[in-house]
Image 1 (cartoon, helix red, strand yellow):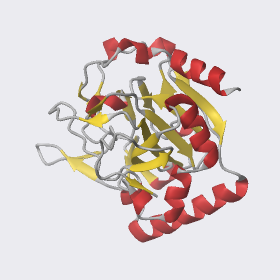
Image 2: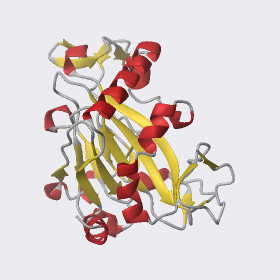
Image 3: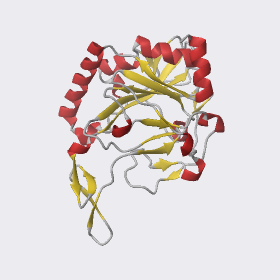
Image 4: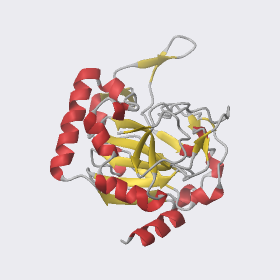
Length: 274
């Protein structure tokens, strides 16, 4: 697909999926390197806590600056692009959970209710949300990447999106009432505001990526398979964006990197060029 057509499709539906990025050799190298981090830190940590490690590991920066990945990103955002933030997210397989009284319990751990009785934890999921809700910047869009290190399919909790929902602007988010939400501040768009009947699944093969707009409503279900679902999530913005002080959107950006073009604005004063 030509760049102009790709940009038009992205702007219309708010996402694109199944974009091939990594060669088999590149994918294996990334999986091997991630396995080293799992051995070093443990899976409880690597599930969600590998945040902004693109400045710590050259191989991670290599993923974030992969030429095929940046080709798709710059087709949407233009030639001058900053890496805003990144994180590995893993949903580990059901085989690493224990069934207790018919309820799946991650990592053999329990929560205690007020009466002291232990109850099994819920399976991890990602609630319906928009990435922009807690990102404190303005002046331009954010584009989110999911670069799949594993196959991402329906049974292991692939991304679901509501096409075109980015045109509705920023929706209200409240604290999720469901246990297991992986989002860092437990945010969730109320169900009555989500047109779930329009939801589209975005399956990926390992080495492919999806991209979506920061206002696109999206979510993912629990991993009910016996396979891991791991991906590298990267946020990109055009250099014209700038940080703002907003208590409703408190996220700061200590690890920004210019990954394409030039930055004539220098709105993110700590941005480096690697």
